[in-house]
Image (tube, rainbow, N blue to C red; front, side):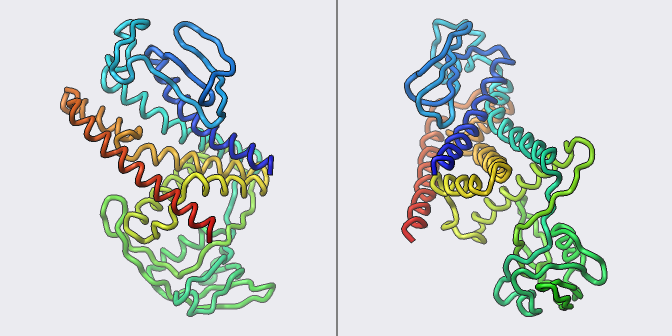
Length: 352
């Protein structure tokens, strides 16, 4: 239990700290004034001052923060005007804000890179973890723990290869060879072609048979230093997260599945129980989630500030304080509603 609590603190705190580190690094690159950079929140435990920046170790180890000079447009008598965040060009302010989510993507990439070097490339096995009711797979006779070994006579050794083969069939019947507890069986399944709208509102057709993966993997040696594989994993998981958000908006995934801090803590706890590498993999996934959530164009989030600075660059003048203040209030209300929904779902799951 103590180990899981430490893992939760290190993972969630580390992700937030790395996010703030992105803001700090880019602000310093541009020569902006930084009043404070803290590891943790709350009362200061230890620290030192270098130049005009107070570096602190604070009591509550759940993340950290960076305080930029002139961040809210206020006067800073201890800093020259040219070092104030609010006096810098909009494109520099945009880069500083965008650096937080970028560092979360970077952290996920570095984790996947390390996992590739330490374990090899993870390949998901074509093992059935579940069969959807009334689906083509259910009608064909698929059951949990069936291992797909070939489709139309072509050997299949990964879940990705199996999915690509099903999609390439475009709804035509497929002869699937499976291994069921050591017994070789042949099933015929006709994929159902589903149509949905992607992130850009375009209609996309996807043949599906109605099976879920079991999640079992094998590890293969990587080519070279694994840079490309880490990049592919980061991009793939980012697409999965974005697709999840879009599916919630389209009500393909129920809003009851949205989780908050309790759900995150449970996921980290379960990963910590499974081992160090699983914990790192979960950390990478949460880091990608954090990056994408922060990029949502909601005022008070990084994405909202990026939107403001982007509009300032386009129209060559800052947005009015009145409009920004009103947007911030609306964004804060929306964020509070989303947080309330997530926490409500967390509590409901605990009680049930």
